[in-house]
Length: 394
Image (tube, rainbow, N blue to C red):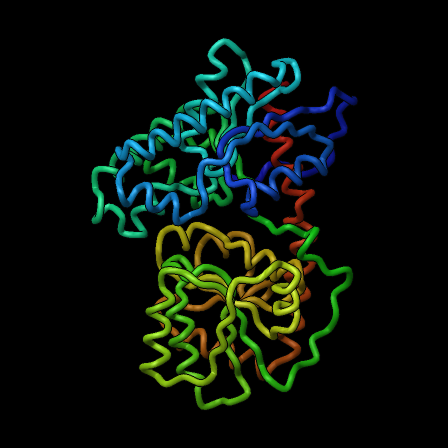
């Protein structure tokens, strides 16, 4: 299974493709922003038909945790979709060629189908990730097994509604194929990428080293990312005062990390709260090494996280946990350095290797920068998405 072709279309000029980007998707989430931007950069018209349902990931977690049969939850769903329907009615059918349901869209695809019962328009869903799997990995099936089972049924049926499903890696498509018996040719691969309007580097510059060797992790402290693993590696490097670990973010596993720091009495770790992207970029630029994900959950092993692509876009040396998904597109010790997710000693050794070898940092950083610009920019991902949609409208 390969990414859609990204060669320029040499067919005669046709009418510009127009997409109705539909649903209660998280409009601020990087995946949706990148997909919409990518389409626009490839001369695809995008009409957004959107209503906000979720306040954030914790809101969705609480919905499953406290019961999908909660009357207040369903009242909120009904009122939101009534507003969405009113908005959808104002868009003339002739104004768009295809409906794209944004992430997350497990409920939205049902309404997209309902709203278009008498309209012959293809539906495409950017699945991106299974919220059933997210619920399992957060142990919500132990707190509310009925809600999680219901969620799995909803997702099972939802997968069968669209003509095409968008996912970011071959490994995730294979998992969905096995979990829900979805034909593999129904999936279209569009990688996560990074917003290179924000995370960009006009020209790669050689790494020259700093007085302090800064290791940066930024993101949510969830099992997918394996932040306690990083803290354990920091403990193994506590005797080298020149190495500093910086953490930006928060999340459910923060307390586990704080307990480890107290247990090991670590002094080589700095914590920073969430920050704006411009400020975050400064921390990334000043870091010597960017850390990816080290969790052992299926989700972590099947995906390639935003922070990896963002580090590549900024020409940084990245260390991340080994997985088939990463190896499928990036070469170890060439565009990234991969470590054993079961052994923090492996991360410690990778950090020491980089610290003592600026030439290797430069080689990996440069290759990562070039690979990103050849394959994973917003424009290229938008072209992949465009070609996937065009196949349905020709």
